[in-house]
Length: 87
Image: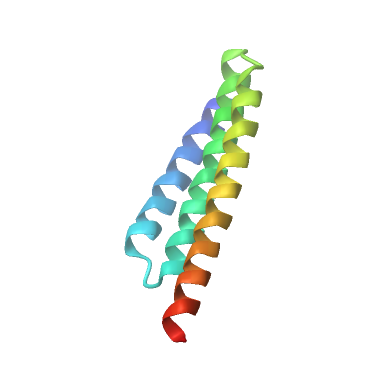
């Protein structure tokens, strides 16, 4: 059952990457990359349970924090860079 879950997560990650490359706006692409990062955290967790390696959960938590901080930083950068061009 965990193997089926892992395969499904990989398929969803591929769909997110297609959306990231084909997204019509910047924010669609950022949302797709964030979705890809979230599904990566889930995949790392599932693989940790599948292989019997509980330390994968620590790696997944660190990856989740990096994903969250990078998306927030990217959106803040775009917000401030657009604000300076307008004035």
